[in-house]
Image (cartoon, rainbow over all chains, first blue to last red; front, side):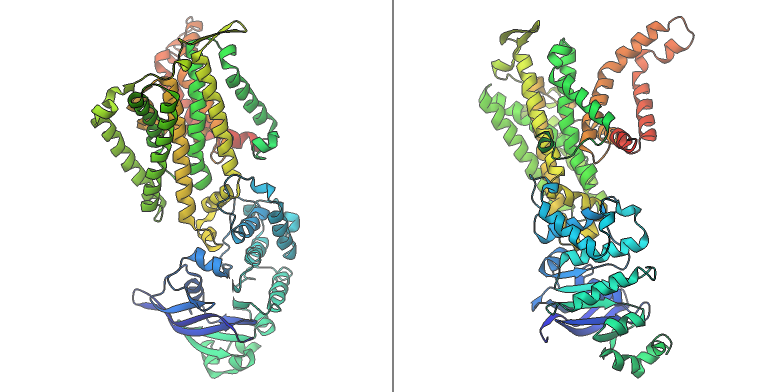
Amino acid sequence: MTQTLLETTDLTVRFGGHVAVDHVTCAFRAGELTAIVGPNGAGKTTYFNLISGQIGASAGSVRLLGQDITRMGVARRCAMGLGRAFQLTNLFPALSVLENVRLVIQARRGKGFNLFSIAASHVEMTTAALAVLERVKLGALRDQKVSELSHGNQRKLEVAMLIALDPQVYMFDEPTAGMSVDEAPVVLDLIAELKHDSDRTILLVEHKMDVIAKLADRIIVLHNGALVADGPPAEVIASDVVQKVYMGREIADV
Amino acid sequence: MIDWLISGDRPRSVALGAVLLGILFSLAFAPFLFPGVRALDTAATILIFIVLVASYDLLLGYSGIVSFAHTMFFGLGAYGVALASIHMGPGWDALIVGALAGALSATVLAYAIGLFSLRVRAIFFAMITLAVASAVAVLVSQLFQLTGGEDGLTYRIPRALTPANRVGELFGVRINGRILAYYLLFFSCTALFLLLLRIVNSPFGRVLQSIRENDFRSEAIGYRVVAYRTAATCLSAAMAALAGSLYAIWLRYVGPDTTLSFEIMIDVLLMVVIGGMGTMYGAVIGATIFVLAQNYLQNLMGAASDATSALPLIPDLINPDRWLLWLGVLFVLSVYFFPTGIVGRLRAGR
């Protein structure tokens, strides 16, 4: 329970004079789901980008499973067990639903440089990909081109690709954004299921307070790039800082 | 068995399948179906260009990488065979050494270009390939003691592959070394094409497509995009060099105009686009149509011009001297009506 999987120390990034993430020090432990909240522009997604490596840090460090990964490329972090789903849907549009997930499984199995076999003949990878699609209820759409999917289904596929990656650190960036009311529960139930697996840690950027209250073990609050609150949901929601940051509106409703 | 050979990548359209089989049949029996030196020359050129265009499609269509150095790699293979045949004397060993040396130097050069420029933006890579290709073309024309300069090089190949080698007669066609050379080309090109088809349908090929679609996400699921792009560039360069070696065996001559010129680069680009990017079969159709048009459009127009000589204006419009104009019109129309290429059109119209 107490094993730290991911840790940021004084993590900072500046864009010109603007400090987008400001000395954030935080540890994420196995078996824990941490919700990251904060108003728009608080630096939540930038913090994610620093952790997963899309942006280089100006100062501070990121450690994954005890190893310093601050200077590592995105692909290597991913291979070490850091998986990320994106806020804006980020898929392979001209490829089929199945192929999108199959590519993830293939990456996981390290088969990318296999040049002389027929991809379709790796039945085991296809089966594994199909199993993941079934979990997000996309099995029936396996042969559809991704660009033809509805927005909600693209969001589900986004989540499916992260699950297929089977990482130790899951990073969800507003997984239910833009989903209809009856689509969101499929994804939220899945995240709840992942929580039971105690070797993993889950980071979740989310706006919807009901979702956070249901899933999170812990909330951290970012404001103007700095970490201003960290603790169990009830405690954080009730704290003065948060009331101030959010102008007392959204959170007070819970 | 056939499915294994074509790597499970079926034409997925009856019309496309029929066209491809027609081309395969015509090329396989070209010496018997279309006798004559010119016809055989055209068939051999089609074979070479199928491989050259397919190897370019691996880059452009499958990986989304724009390169202008493809004919440079083609030329490296051709000059490899030429130089080896001159310095080692005519022989099979010279052909093999030349082809391997050409492919190897193409791979090394592609690797160097890739490492320097594939990390940064795509346009930068395109510009670098253009610069390197121009530099090599200038070098080849300047180092005339080695390369023959603008005149190029002529050399001898094993006697078995020359017209002097008479073997006998089959179906009323005199079989000589030239026809044997044609079949050497036919089987080599078929093998190289099937190899390319396998590569694009392999797990590696799928990664390339994912990079073309969204390199950001490919990296995020754990593929090192630079490594894959570099590998694709090297593979494509090696294949182009092998096609160049075969061309050198066929022509028994290399020169800047036949292998290195920028015109060929543009032809290759057009063949990929007309056939259909990202579909290996597009290379077959694009190369066939293009090479046929280059070789026979003039004749066709001459015949049509004569046939319509009684009418006003029309004979002048289709005068054989204007064949380039009509070739241009054909391309504009085909790109306009088949934005996804002929293969894309045929597959969609299923």
